[in-house]
Image: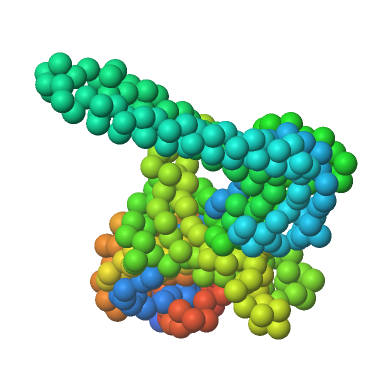
Length: 407
């Protein structure tokens, strides 16, 4: 008996230990289910809408007159009298008298030229009469033997030439008399005056400067790329000028606007700035054709203006905030709430917006933000935002409880 116990007791003990261990394992308590919080990004998105988009090309320039001229004299003399309108800042009309020069000597020259012409005409009449007498005297002489000198034909031509010469001298003397009266060459604004009563002026001396007030001209520099967006047909392109907006808004002043007429370009790319210069005109900038009570938005020469030039519209385009596009890509959220990168074709960009020509379909959702450390294929929760309510980009995350088993 003792031998049997000694031989099989270890086996029995081992089996009891194995059975006890199995029972403990089978009867152990089950681990409780643990709730794990997973952070799911929330993206603000806008729904893509295709439309025909119209936009402007902005440019800046200074208002200058289309016509301007130096007032010079074509005769010399002493300034006898100045018109009240010949003063800096005064508006004048075409042919208004500005100044008078001493014309006594020129009237004397005119009288002398008149006398010379009268004398030449008298000599011509005498020569014509002599020619008639000579012709009668030689009427019995054969025509082949009659000489031109005998008929006094050269003498009559000489006197006719003297008459023509005297007429030219008279016309010159009359012009010199007229030139002693200085007049405005066109409707304009006097900007400079260099003479006074008693001043002696010589031929070609500058008397003053005048700006034409019929048309104001503005040169607008734009880049060649911006110029490609503009319809070069003046009938299809509208231009609106305004004064310096920020300065007026800060001081509470109302903005002024002027409609300009698009003329075209200067035909070249400036070799130094590499810009294309557009030419626009404003008719009657000082509104002189209106009464003083009707003059509201006067456009002064020298004003620095902002120009909005209507560009060619883009058909079936999508307008997005500029920060939504990086390196020609946007963050798209599909119907399953999964993000993906999408390459787009940009028609143009300005300071605030990007205009997408291709790459997006109607109704797709585009994220307003670019999440940090974004990985394509991320599951997100979307918040649809109206395009009209788009504000500063915001990225938020909220906890979402997801059941997960674990120790």
